[in-house]
Image 1 (cartoon, one colour):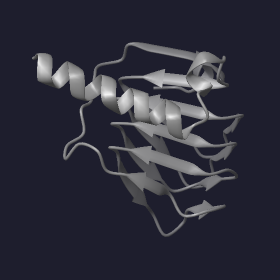
Image 2: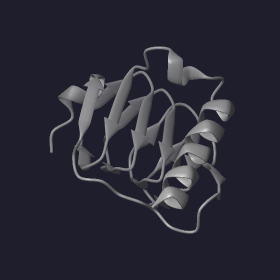
Image 3: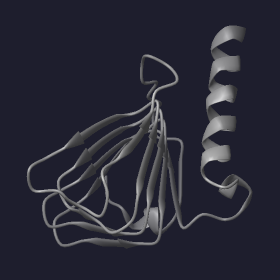
Length: 129
């Protein structure tokens, strides 16, 4: 158990390092655990941080900002205006996806750890389940 906790802390440290230490500032949206769907026609303004969650961006949905994920599953079918950073995450890019850049993947752990719904804040509060 201690080894798993140490690995998770290492991943969080590296994620914050790669994202200019934005962990200490209030991000636009945070989802921790659970499954979140951004439906067709919905627009999430600002950045989205996903930790240990499953995020689905349906065809016709849009994120006006960056997506940063830690040990999450990103299923992208809509439009993302910013960059995508996936640390220890699975990324599925569908044919309908419109991405400003290819997702940047950082492989630290060989598996994805998903948690039940724990928290969501910012613009993510409007994301329906």
